[in-house]
Amino acid sequence: MPGTIPVPFGEWRPDIGSLDSGVATEAENVFAGITSYKPMPSLLAFAAQSLAAGGNDSFTKVLLHCDGADASTTFTDSNLGGSAHTWTANGNAKISTATAKFGGASGLFDGTGDFVSTPDHADYTLGSGDWTLDGWFNVAGGAGATRFMWGTDDAADTHTERTVDIKLDTANKVQAQAWVGSTAYAVQGTTAFAAAGWHHVAFTRNGNTLRLFIDGVQEGGDVAISGTINNRTSTMSLG
Image (cartoon, rainbow, N blue to C red; front, side, top):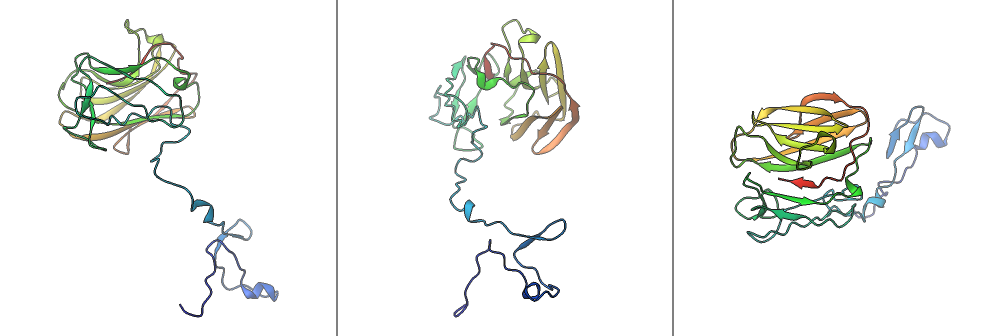
């Protein structure tokens, strides 16, 4: 309004009553503390921040958007927090523009020898810390068969060579596993997926607890885990 001087949002000015040793009746631009009111921090520091990265930050070690031209076999890792990883298409794995959740394309795997893989790297060493694996999937057939989405393994399926994996089991439900030695700590999903449609899956470790989320809803409950996730030289694969 004309004639008024705006007070910056982050600025704190105490009620006039406190200046006269009186009782304050209003407290503006403050947060309630334990024993008193605290100045509200300035929001100016956030002004220069960009949301363009969409969650791609220093903690992101792998990010496959599966974008590109139709039938392309180039899978670009766009992560900002890890090294430059080269992903190799195997079988008939390719980019498809027939359906997409974001960006106009997605990765297409026909379930018969199709996957993209990258050599082992220190970025994939999970240890005993916190982590998240997440992505989008769209079922395109194969109901009743085990279909791996993501994980590490060797040709002989040696349990001690496995680290983490996410799959659709024979009941068409998501199962996520973390491996410590030859022990699999598994979280079993409850929703069956046999029809086409995009769905989000997230597998997390927080402290000594594993959790599985499907479309933002936790399934399978909290699963206790102890120890360090296997650190092996097997390739990391998607699809």
